[in-house]
Image (cartoon, rainbow, N blue to C red; front, top):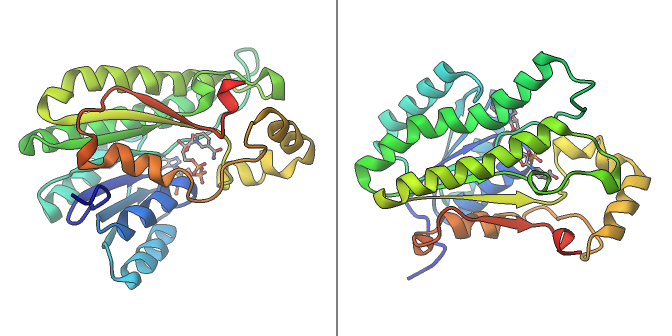
Amino acid sequence: MNLFDFKDRVTVITGASSGLGADAARAFAEHGADVVIMARRKEKLDTLAEEINAKGKGKAFAVQCDVSNEESVKNAVDSVKERYGKIDILLNNAGIATGGTIETLSDEEWDKAINVNLKGIIYMSKYVVPIMKEKNYGRIINIASINALFADKPMALWRHPYNMTKAGVIGLTRGMAASYTQFGITTNAICPGLFESEMTANTLFKTEEFMKMYNGLCPASRPGSRGELNAPILFFASEGAGYVSGQYLLVDGGFSIV
Ligand SMILES: NC(=O)c1ccc[n+]([C@@H]2O[C@H](COP(=O)([O-])OP(=O)(O)OC[C@H]3O[C@@H](n4cnc5c(N)ncnc54)[C@H](OP(=O)(O)O)[C@@H]3O)[C@@H](O)[C@H]2O)c1
C-alpha cells in the first residue's frame, strides 16, 4: 500500500488562494488527488489551478466560495458533487487572524472572526458530510492553531477572537469525530505554530523584535518553512489513518513543550 497515494481522491480545500491552503493543494495534487480549490479570490485560484494542471499529476478545479456565507458554500459543494459525484477529503483551512481584546473589539469584528473561522467549517461540513456518508468514507481536517491552546502573553499579541474561534475548532473536531467516525469519516485538527503566509508576512514576520522573541521561545529556533505542514495534513487525509479520529496535532517546532 502506498501510504500517500491520493489518486482519484476528490479533495476540497478552503482558503486555497494563498499560504498554507495553496501549499496543501500542491501537495495533494503531487500525490495524485483531484483538488477542488476554494476561496473568494478567483483569479488567484485560477492561477494556482493552471500551475497544478500544467504539472500533469493530480488535477485542480477552482471554485469561488465565501465560507462565511451558507448559500455560497452550498452552491460550491453542489458544483463539486455535480462534477465528481463524491468528496473524499475536506481540508477546512480558510481562516482570519482577528487581533484585539474583549475591551477593544466591536460586535462586527467578533462576528467576522466567528463567521469565517467557525461557521465556515460548520457550513462546509454540513454540506460535505452527507456526500461522504453516501460512500461511507471521508477524511476531514480542520486547521486550528496553537493559539487555540495558548494565549500570546509572552509575545504580547492580544487576539481574543483568534484564541476563542480556534479553540472552538478543536471542540467541533471532537464532536464531529464522535458523530461520524462510525460512517468511515474521520475528523482531526492541526494546530500550526508560526508559518509565513499572507496572514503573517506583513505583520509578525515584519517585526524583527517579534521574530527574535518567537525564535527564542521555539525549540526549533525558527518558524515553520513552506511545505512543512503538508505531511501532517496528508497523514490525517490518508486512507491508512482511518483509525485516527478526534485528535489534534501541534506542528510548531516544539513551541508548545517548553
Ligand atoms: N500562518 C500561520 O502562522 C498560521 C498559524 C496557525 C494557524 N494558521 C491557520 O492556517 C490557515 C491558513 O492561513 P494562512 O497562514 O495560509 O493565511 P493566508 O495566506 O492569509 O490564507 C488564508 C486563506 O483563507 C481564505 N479566506 C479568508 N476568508 C475567507 C472566506 N470568507 N471565504 C473563503 N476563504 C477565505 C483566504 O482567501 P481569500 O481571501 O481569497 O478568500 C486565504 O486563501 C488559517 O486557518 C489560519 O488561521 C496559520
